[in-house]
Image 1 (cartoon, rainbow, N blue to C red):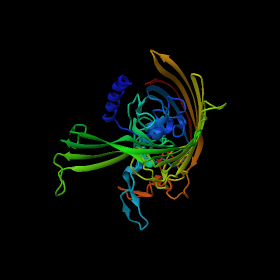
Image 2 (image 1 turned 30 degrees about the vertical axis):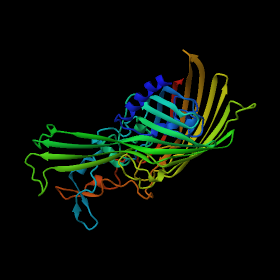
Image 3 (image 1 turned 120 degrees about the vertical axis):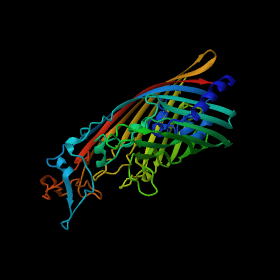
Image 4 (image 1 turned 90 degrees about the horizontal axis):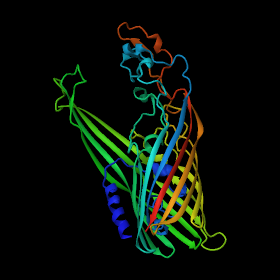
Length: 488
C-alpha cells in the first residue's frame, strides 16, 4: 500500500494544482463511465467515483487505484424548418432609417445583416461530435472502517478543455447562424476533479464531504491601432489570470438493516466564469475627457450546474440466496430555475426544476460482476415558442457493465468494461407570435436615408433568427470504455 501511495499522491497533487477549465457536467451526463454501475453512482456500490457522487460511500469501496478510458460518440440532429418567403433581410437595410409612428425617422434599433451576406448558411454548425475521456481515481483507507479519502478525475483527451459560447437568439446570425444543444456541446469537453473524505460516526451512519474544483478566468487585453483605416495591423498585450475555486458536495448514508442502505446527497451550485476587458487605443482618436482608451467588457458562464439533491436506496443481502445481488435506485432534484446560460444571462422564460430517476443492479458471481442501469432525465427547458432557441430534449439512458477479478503479481486486479446509450427523445418546436417574447421584425418599416422614400422590402416581417419558424431536435449518445483497478 505504501508503494501505491507514493505513486498516487503525486498524481493527485499534480491534477489539483493544474489550471485547466473545469466543470462537473461530464460527470452528471456520463456518471463514472468506465466502470460498471456508471449511471447510479449516487446510490450504487462505493467506488473512487464516490468522491464526487456520494462521498460517504467511500467507506464501502475497496482500497485501490483505478485508471480507465471511455469513448463517446454523439449523433445529434437539429432539423430546421424551411423559412417562408419574404422573411429574408435585403441589402437595402444599409440605407435604411426606421419610420416611427409619428412620421419621424430614427436609427435602426437592431442591425441585422442582409441574409445573403451572413458568413454561414443557416444551420451550418454540426452538433455531432466524438470525445475521448480518461478516468483516474483512488480510495485510501486512513483508519480501517472509520476514515477514508477518495479522489476521482474525468479528463477529456482531445480537446483537453473547450469553451464555445453562442447566442440563443437572432444575434447568432453574426457567428455560426445555427442552433446549439444547450446542455451538451462544450459541456462534455471539460475536466472534472473531486477530492473527498468519509467518516463513520456510528456503526450505521456514514458522513462524506467533498470538493470539486472549478476555475475562473480573467483577461485584460490592451490593443493599440496605429491606423484606424487599416485595422488588420494592431499591437496588443493580452494578460490572462486563472484562479481555482472549490465547490462542496456531501452525503449521508444510514443502514437501518444490514441489507439496506438509505442515502442522501447534496451538490452546491457550480459554474466557471470568464471575464475580460479590452482597452482599445486608436492613434489620433478624440477621447472624451478622462479617457485614454475605449473599454469593452465581456463575461461568460460555462458549465453551470444547479443545486442538486438526491435520495437513494440500496438493497444488498450479505447472506442467503440473494447474496451477491445489489438493487439500488435514486431520485435527483435539480434546481434549474436559477440557470445562467453561456452569456451569463438568465433565460427570459426560466428553466424548470427537474426530477431525474435512475435504477440499477449489480450481481457478483465468483470473480465476475455484472451491472445494468437505466435513467430518465427530463429536460428543464420550456417550450421555445419565442425569440430564444435553447435546444434540449428528454433523455433515456441505459448502461451495462462487466468486471472480472484476477490476481497478477500477487495483486488483485479488476478488469472492467462498460457500455452506455442515451436517446434524446424527439422534440418539435414551433415559433408563435403569441409567445411572451416572440421573434421580432428585425427590419421594420423604413425609408431610404438618401431619397426619403419608403423601402418596399421593409414592409412585413423579416428576421434572421436561425430558429424561425421552428425546428426538431433529437439524437443518440453511445459510449464504450474499460478500466483497470489495482487493489491495495
